[in-house]
Image (cartoon, rainbow, N blue to C red; front, side, top):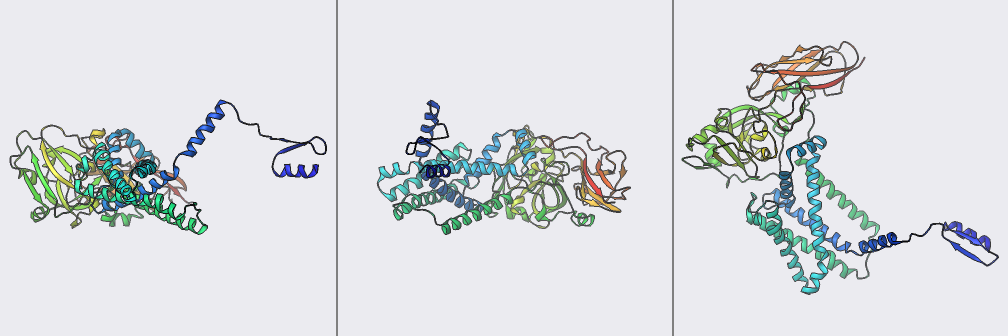
Length: 547
């Protein structure tokens, strides 16, 4: 008998002491937790376990369905996607220096993080609304009334409370889609939220009054479906985020072939989660403010005017030294100065404010707007502007960073006094002149080379041209002039350069590049981050030479 109990005690991980043949005492090896702290923890855990987590989870899942529907409607320009408005609101509150630090640390992941946080918070709000489902059910005592209450309650809360708090206006009046599209999308989203919630909290309990457990097959089915939805959502998000990396070409030949960037490879940066989809048929461009003859133009009227063509390079102010947020295109449109002068500006006007379909604003000096190189662009590479590049019309301001070349422009307003646009209110430069930079674009950084090598890259200084590019292959000890590709597409574009190099020995070699602009001003040596005037400093890579 004693041996049997000893074996049992060993199998259960407990200690049994024997006092005589039948006197057994049970001793727990783990000291019990007692005292006021333990009691408080037990009470806290009991309350946590007692919360209606199933209703909360059902609300989150139903809210996810509603958000997915409104996202699809937003993509097609039929409604408002609440996380889009929330991220835009949050970005407006974050100081530019903090935002720039996140972008430098996380790249495009900073926007993904903002979107994910917004979605999670909104799903939590849906979950909290579902917690009160049984109480609403007990009051209304009718299934269809409960569905109606959650349909109209959730949609009206978004339209009349949440959107105004996030700057979208009452019923989405401050969004480009307007109140009707906002109301339509949120009512449909509210209906889907209510019906999915009804399915989880009414249909399923009715079919399984004793409760149910997922079979292995159901678990795999729903697990795989969840993975597919998550992967699809992440892919969709990734398509909206710029892929920040080094500017790179596979070879000098490819670099020359892509002197004008293929439209599908032209960099894209936007403050939006989902960019606006603008209907050219209903779009209007308004010229107002300090003008004697305010005007409104349709898309077809502008297209009928004599077009102007020019090649120009755009660079994002957030581009790091050597970064790929820089591209060149052939643009077609109208001289912005001609469009403005047709409205007869008043003598006091000295700045121009651009307002856009996505709520973006930016301003430039009237003198810069009248620069012959500044365009109201309608086409890119002999085709209408792609949606992500500002269709139906955008402003092109060569010599300044890309944030001044407003996309989806809807209004041009002449004012007196300096204008602080969307990014300028967050601390970014309102001068915006491109800082000269030379970029090493081929071979790729840290690549292994052997024998003679053709190093190549681009040099850019806005609208000031390039007079000299120098390359160092010994870490900056000595410099030699590179060969500039002549002629460049225009004085507004980057200039391609090449440098033949025969490595003196194997091992690691540090290669640097620098430039001098068309006015004889050399590139800045000091390193500076993008915020708030654009990055500066010499680009540098390491090449590994095989023996």
